[in-house]
Length: 334
Image 1: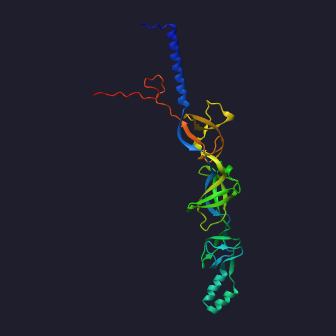
Image 2: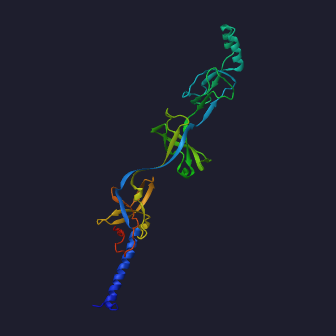
Image 3: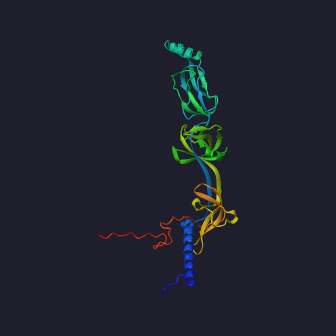
């Protein structure tokens, strides 16, 4: 039987087949562009979120004072050692002037009686501490000759950590801010401190503008030593008992679906039939790994972490092997 292509039923049939193929082609292209696949399921959970900024630093004296002798001469006795705490006005060392040292050396050769007489008549000069603090350097030993330019001891009123903060993070730092201090020498210990001072002038370090931030420890532990390398963690914000999801679960609202209540972000859940549907969500703070959800989901609710499907190897809906299927390889027959 010969098929009449000009007959009305045949034309209608061909038109229906054409429309079906076009709809399939465009719907397939749309699905490949926006189709999502589930990476894993997670549950919304309450927890604490700490927003932090990290910087490297160095332990150093807040005020470093070199104690130099008021006169040139010989150091007869040093009364302190490194690590000692001294008070203001305390005698740190006893000195002989150049004249006294020469006179006593000459008198010693004339006998003990003459030596003692001159020793009592010509008194030692004391070296006094100008402030309360800790001795961090003892530069000389008894018998050593010094000038007025030579420090005998170095005193620090307190040890601090000077952290170098990148200018891009400076807006997160403020006076009195809580910090964690980690010393490389004592990696397992955490010392707490607070921001005491922020410099107004930057430094150029490795072509990056940084600002020196003084961090004052709450207590100066015995393990602190001037010059130690430290890592400082600034606590920018602490959020307690808030709803949290992995940051990778937060997606932009799909463009092909109208935004409910101007939603910018979406989480995804599965319906009873297994279909993925977006949930409008409002987000709060994030530490990069976890994100706070302020509206859209409840505690213990299950959501899906999704990602866009990769493009198929074949996008031709008319392929005899089907969309995305590979063409069979031709085998050579020997």
